Amino acid sequence: MAGLKLRRATVVEAGDPEAPFQRLAVEIAGARRPAVADTVLVGPAQVGDDVVLNTQALDLGLGSGGFDVVHANLTRGLEGEGTAGAHVMKLNYTSLQHAVMPVEAEAAPSVGISPPVDSLAGSLEGSPAAMVFNHGQLAPVCWGVAQVAPGARVGFVQTPGGALAGGLSEVVRELRARDLLAGHVTAGTAFGGEAEAITTAGAIHHGLRDLGWDAAVTGPGPGVIGSGSALGHGGLYALDSAHVAIALGCRALIVPRLSSGDARPRHQGLSHHTGTVLRLLLAPATVAVPEGLDVAWPAQPIQHVWRSAPVDLDGYSASGLPTRTMGRDLEEDRAFFAAALAGGVVLGEMVREAAPA
Image (cartoon, rainbow, N blue to C red; front, side, top):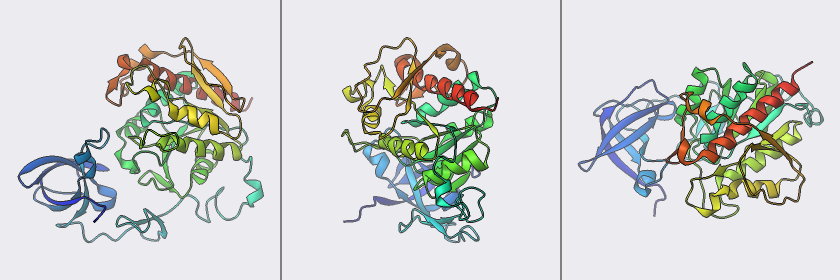
């Protein structure tokens, strides 16, 4: 049996062909369905195009994947030439493998072949790096930083754990347009950002050393994969990112995933995603704690630093940035946004602390 759930369809409505993810309506056997085309991979579509769709997410009713995805455009998508000069593959040995120009190229100032390996350990000298567990945390974190450290250059390193396609995030585009985000690097199997990194380590190092970021935020794209088990969820990538950041000399900040509105017991209060990472960390990290929020922080084998911060939920609500997460708005899940805002405030304070006197 084939693992891919592919169906042939006709495009009946086509959105902006210049968008990284083009919104479409398609027809399969007389039924109209929403779809998207990753224009970086498969090119834009037009009305009447004959396309092959991956229908798995929509058929499963996934909350973050309520659309079909164009796998190939049979009408106009079979003449792509790839990126000239690129030779490092992403999504390698899948039908969507494509070559990219990684930031870890030999000519890169800080992550290429020239620096001795021994010089990389601790090389980022206290630069702040925050780990988020859910893409919905990114906007309040960046807004929180701006309230404390206006003008700070915060970059986003997109890791696996959620959507791999960098172009899918409308949040990233909005934050970039409002100068709340200084850059977007997709690392590992994630792809389609403003720059591509083979590893999270390379992405963090390149952003903080070569691009001049004052702080890095690592986390997944939209949606989080998960099985409900202790180790089978996308939030666990924060553990890898934190260890990498600490090894490079960063001050690692954990932005906890909290919830006051999630009906699932494992995510109520402190999400098991964050609790597991705090238990498994091999070195101390700072954990952002929203002032005035009563959370049962579990005992940890490592003595982490709990740092509280005031949060302005009303101010964020009036900012025009996204105030919904996993189908709930801010008033339905104040703890989620409070924790992310606290993370932003603490990250902004770390930026100020790291600035030269």
